[in-house]
Image (cartoon, rainbow, N blue to C red; front, side, top):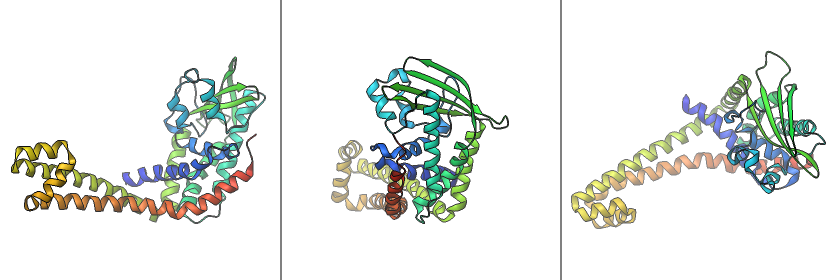
Length: 304
């Protein structure tokens, strides 16, 4: 059950990133960047409050605003809309993201990628639709920090938005999110994926099991082969231990002694290929529809 839930959470997010990564470099593809951000929201932590459903992993990995030069900051913000004020820029970015998630949820695609995106983005649409109120605003030169909270007191959601300004206006730079609502949304994504794609969930769980077994089997076979090499001669053992190519030479030179561990290693390669083939099949079968979906998102022409 743990494997299923883990896969159900990771796979659709990976699919989302894979589907939109080709679009990140073009200004008309704001949706792609924001979808990629959604995958890391629950992992974000800040010194104040936290953001809506998205926190870009690239932003988090880069550190604080002060640690980034203007060129890097502009690169991270290039696909987000400008605003005359920090609050306007944040509102526009949130509306853009909502339109993106809605486009994924209303798609008519039947491939794994389309259905996975629909399952994952449905809870995100609900998250982005939560009305917010501005609690605090701090502006220092070309940097601004906005703190939001859900308007309804029974919704535990706080957002911190970091924005930067250039000659065109304000743009959202980084967001973080905190509150029980973030965890609830993650659970909803897992539930939606496993419910709407039960067959794929089972197959992807099988793929993970195959990969784990392949790793264990390969390790056992390699250790067994090295032990047999030491039994033959200490030189063979040391060579096999430090130089994997020597293991192959040992197999051909001492087949009767190396046959069983070699067959175990060979079996692990078969399991590994099988484990990789399952997600590879789903990715390949979704490529055509993902390309079409990206073209539809480009036509939204949300970016300025």
